[in-house]
Structures are given as C-alpha cells and as structure tokens.
Length: 430
Image (cartoon, rainbow, N blue to C red):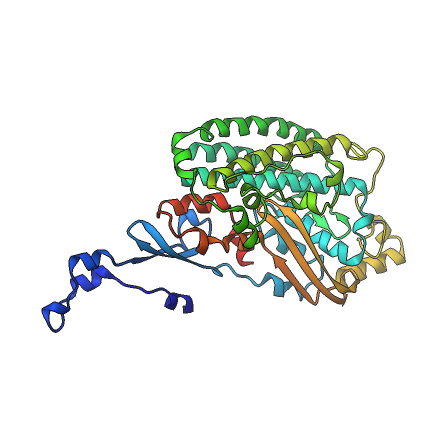
C-alpha cells in the first residue's frame, strides 16, 4: 500500500540474525541495534479497534513515534448507492451507518430530505416529540455500549454486563415500536412509519427510572476506581484548539472544553422547548470524555421524560394527533383510501415507483448524533432520487486526529484512547 512506503521499516532482529556481509566492521553494534524502531500492525482484527480499523504503529520500545490509520475495510459505497434509489428506499441504509443508533440516523437523514423539500417546518408536533424520544434512546443505547466496551478494554468486565443489560431493554422498546430490534427503518420522509403502540409510553417511562440506577452502579465501579483512573487520567489529551482544528464533534469535542452541541447551536425538532444541560470537560483526556458521556445519558433521560409528559395526544393518542405531514404527494395515503379512491391510488403508485418529487437544489443538515455531528449533503436535480449525496460521518472525522494524538503515548495507552473516542467503523467507512 502507498502509505506503507512512508514508514521506514527497520527490522533489527532480522538483521542481527543474518550473517555479516563483507568486513566484520560493517555489522551493527548492540547499542545501534537498540536504537532501531519496530513497526507493528494493530488490527484490522483486534478486539480493541472496535471493528475493522487498522493502525500501523512505529514503536521506539513501548513509545509510539508514528501512527498511520488504515481505513476502508468496511466500505460499501453507501453514498453511490443513494444515487440509484428513491429517498425513501435509502432509509434502511442509514441504519447501517452508526448501527448502535439506527433510530437517530433515520431521523437525521429524513430531516435533511425534508429540508430539501421545504416541509421541515410542517412536521406535526407529535411526530417531532416521538422523533426526539427516538434520538435520545439511541444516544443512551450507543453511549451504554461505548462505555461498556471502553471499560472492558481497560480491564473492567463487570461494567459491560451492566450496560448491556440496559441496552436489551432499549432493544425491547425499539422492537415494540418499529418491529425490529437492530435495523429499525422507522422514520419516513414527512413523518413516521407508525404511532406509539399501546403501553409503550409506560414501558419507556419505566425504563428511564431503571436505567438511572444503572448509571449510578457503573459510576461506582469506575469513577473513583484507581486502575481506571491510572489508565485514563492525562492520557490521550486533546486540547481545545486541536479539537477545533480537526473538526471533532460530539462528546469528544465537549470533553476538550468546547461548549458546542448541534441541538443548541442550530436547534431542530422540539429541542428548543426542552430543558437540558450540555456537559463540558476541562482537560480533554480519556477520563473527561468518559464523564461527559455519563452525564449526557442522564440528560437524555431528562429529555425523554419531558417529551413523554408533553407529547400531544398523550400515551394513547386519544385526540388522534397526526404523525405525518398532510401532503398526500409526500407520504403514503391510508390503506383504506388507497383501496377506495382513485386519487390516493395514483399517489401511492407514484410515491412507490418514483419517490417523492424533490425540487432542484442543494442542502446540508447536521444532527447531534451519539458520535458527533452526523450530516447529510444532498444535491438534487429534481425527481425522486438525489443527484449526489454525501455523508459527514462523525466517526471518520474524529479518527483523523489519531496520527497527531497517538505519538508519545505507550502502546498500552492506544486501547484507552480508542475506547474513549468511541467510534463505529460502519459509519466511518460507509
């Protein structure tokens, strides 16, 4: 590979073992051999790289002197696929980006298309509240797994068992809401696939009470744990300026002391009406990023409870509040009308075969996803498919700092740093 040529590979052991050529004075002395550096491949099959990430490390003893990330092992061409599909057909592909938070991916993509079509301001309030609940459940789910994997990487297996227990409850909620546990495909352009099922409101409220106790247990195991502190304090420090220069977003940015959250900076859905705090770190180390994510999960519970209290129509939608825009040329009409009305039948046929008729133009929309700002740039020339679609994947951008961040650390610190950055290769490679 071309980037391998940039690293000077000097295998001291091999040269020491080979017989000397020419004069005896040409062979290297022991002191010179000890100054040689070693090149080590970490990944792409390594438990601490959280997927098929490969990092080529140049080591001087235990100290890293150079790091070259090698990406693309999971590349599927999502952005090119989008050009050959209708806007609605691409929704399942967004599930496979950050596959720990598919509900949030669906919402971010749908909002981008709705912005292109000019209907983002027409979404019914009930739809907006349900979307926010989905986004925050996805944030808790992603952070729980990220926290559990991070703790397991540095030797705390019990935390992973605690966090995964709570994620199973989120999967149960997702299954009853969407019909799927993992790849949900719940959002639609202009609304949602279906309303809340009976009893879901109460189950979600019950989960919020239980998961907070889990946060307390996890913090008791980690926050003042001597081993965890030694592995994370003053390790992987990302300065405020470096975080900005490398365009890092999400908890990794806020852990470095930058008070920036897309939900506050450019509000969308009903976030302006909700009360929540944005946790910010001070040092920018692995420990700060851990603390930020812990508090973010508590704030997500706070947001969900507010949404459950305020959602129009209540738990059972007794007032029959809509969950989709009223435009029959944007969302599929009710099935009974399709079977009894020619106009609705034509609308369904056009939407299914050609997709929504988006106007020409270009838009960008970014949402505050668990890993950072997930953005969609859409270039439209009209019709039901995008001319060009570009995904701003936060995991990809956040990993760009590794060549700058890893040198100077010990080999064992790489595991802590990668766990604290909390990335997913599904959206990194796309």
